Image (cartoon, rainbow, N blue to C red; front, side, top):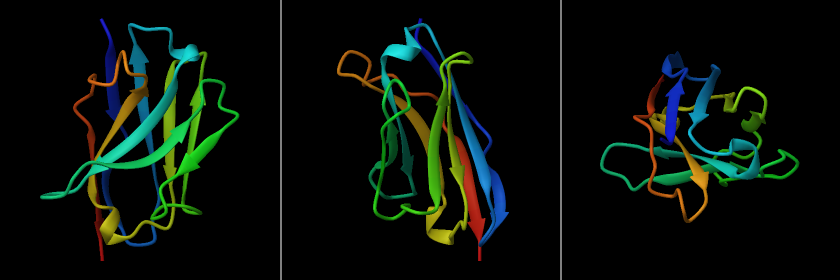
Length: 117
């Protein structure tokens, strides 16, 4: 059974940092790229960052470039999102997702990030 469990969110002041984790199970983690999305209230879900299966390639949404870093550990089956220089507009629920048509509908419960001004 595919499971994605996000953690690490919380309340932080503007300019602060958080590190999100997504623990994955139930599929061959090391063979799939992974993505982080976020969804703010009354807004559509937004792609934040993506990483290849090996971790050698990454890309980011324009709004987070230079501030967020995606990484992964294929031994621990975990993908991370290091978020620095946080802004109030980063406030959202953050989700990880598998970069695959086969698994695209699997979502975890997400982790809430709230950035105060």
